[in-house]
Length: 339
Image (cartoon, rainbow, N blue to C red; front, side, top):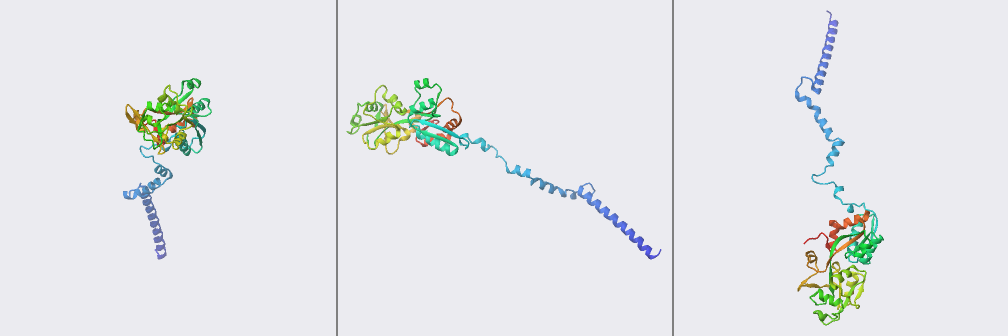
């Protein structure tokens, strides 16, 4: 064989061997990647970490990981009461007792702060005005510092009383008055016009100026029932149309005496202890809760039928822990307060 022919055949053989080698290597690579060949087992899992990484960073996995609910914690929507959810809206009127007035105003202010679309208008006028306004539906909620009368129940059979606080009637004098305590009989004697000088009830010689409430007042009716009985009040009594007016009238009159709701007591007046079987009992929250203070009562919201809508939401808020904390902050006694 001549040399050129030998080179030609050798080159062709080489090409054939090279092609076979390429095919073999390709097959081995494919087998290694797919795990179907006979290559070492350690080569097969090469693609697995890539798959796992993709799963962790997928959008679905990310959402699931960023919105867990802690164990034992309710969703926010379930723990928020309707009164504080900010969704209450509309307008209602609340009117009546000037004793309940400061409580209702503070409750309304806080409720409207939590619910900017709600408008609650609070005004006084006395318990009689509150009951009538609720009965005639000129106000959604009346305020009363006394129980409903039989005549009111007959005229407005749909009236409902909702106790929102407890209160004590405090007998107040000028801070300079040194009388340590008064019995209910002595207070009755003063308001009947029989005791006209402080020396008649253990004080210094000084004329007594008697101050009380007007005829529309629930506080006056309660006072008359618990203190006066069937005894008429003296015609010399100065009638005032609110607790605040009674309190401010004490200052200019060192010999004066009046009565107000517990929440109206401050340093400008002196609350006189009431003697019960010879023991002076101060008008305090503790004594009202224990039942030892003789002039205590409940304060009411009054509605004609069951409250609905904004009126119901406001009443519910007033009876909530936050609402009752406001009651006590105003110097009254929570309806849920226990001894």
